[in-house]
Image 1 (cartoon, helix red, strand yellow):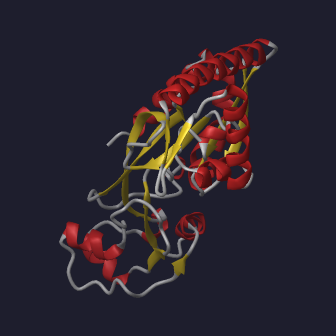
Image 2 (cartoon, one colour):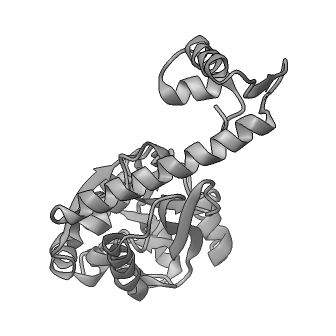
Image 3 (cartoon, helix red, strand yellow):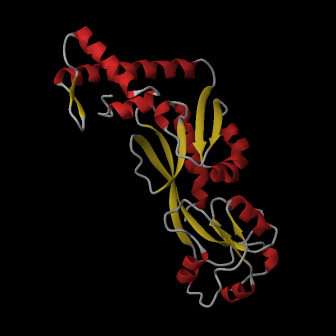
Length: 281
């Protein structure tokens, strides 16, 4: 309640009704014999006494939480739950699990894939790899790498210059939620100064992974994140025939604001920064 200045928002976080929150605060005020809140029509504010009590309670709860985490981490392998979007998880992180486990044998890593933004305040996720412009509120964030996009295709297509694009099948990925400036064929052609290309034709995919598989199979050329196809490029399954790239957003290593930077989390961040370094533009 003190953090939100709203019965409704506090009730939503606690999964109870606003009336239940108000009732509990009334009981506390009756028990203490003093007002803790100034209730206005548009906002609920702490009284000086309420602010003093809130600061003491918040500090005590943080101390208990920190001690609980230390006990939990000291009871065996450090358990770390990492969340990332499904594309990064399946196409970049999972193929490197053997390397990660060899580098961090004392970390019991739990992987959580979701394209929805995970609320780190609930304590179910220790680390989130977020893709976007940065500036995440109520969180500690470290930028890992800037993303770039470029056309890739199977080497069997034999594309060597931009004029060959006129005989190639263009693959499209629809419904991208990030980056903010969509890396699509019209934007790439404008950047690369390619004129006269029919950018409206070609198969369309709602899943980027399926579009990548189509490109590997030789069905066409697609604009994708070079980080997500790094392994396919290294293995020769895909090639990047043109040097022109489009900027994307960035990957960030994000943890809750009040969570301690444990040795396990610091080691995971260090490994991830080192592992991504070769792909920096």
